[in-house]
Image 1: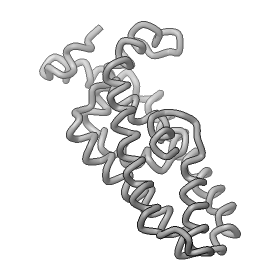
Image 2 (image 1 turned 90 degrees about the horizontal axis):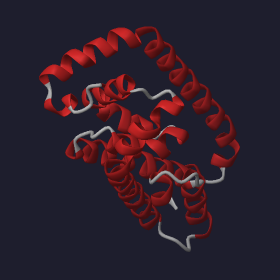
Image 3 (image 1 turned 180 degrees about the vertical axis):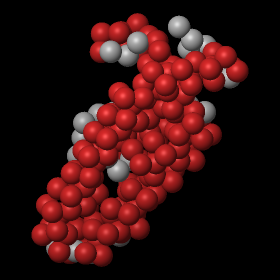
Image 4 (image 1 turned 45 degrees about the vertical axis):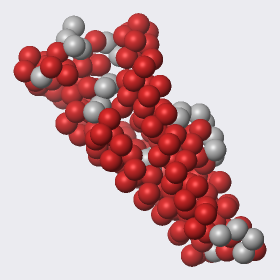
Length: 196
């Protein structure tokens, strides 16, 4: 399930990890190490499959249908520029935001983020996300049930605030950033292919 969610399907992988950790803590019928290894492996594999899907199909689909959802060729170039400059942070921190977690690998593949960079930050994010959530839930035991509601609300508020701030920043600076991307594309072979 973790792998499938990381590939882009809307599944409750986070809840599964927490539930599995609680099951380990209360019944001792599963080993927490196995749950952590399965979660981390599923997260990393799923994102790599998502990256491959995005790499093979994503750019063509975005080029063909992107205008329908506001993704013009200039915005695709800007997205590529951002992924080439800050893609590692996007991949790593995207792992901790539920909606972004489902799409970041597909976008990274579609935008043609270098695979070796994607793999490193994806693996790092998978270890911290799947391993961290599972281990924390295991250590907190039943206390996590009481705290999870407030923690989820807090993370949700922070995530929404960050996403809104980024959207406002990009909207206000889109022309300047696009001009930077166009200038960089003149010198960068990876970006040149996306010039309108």
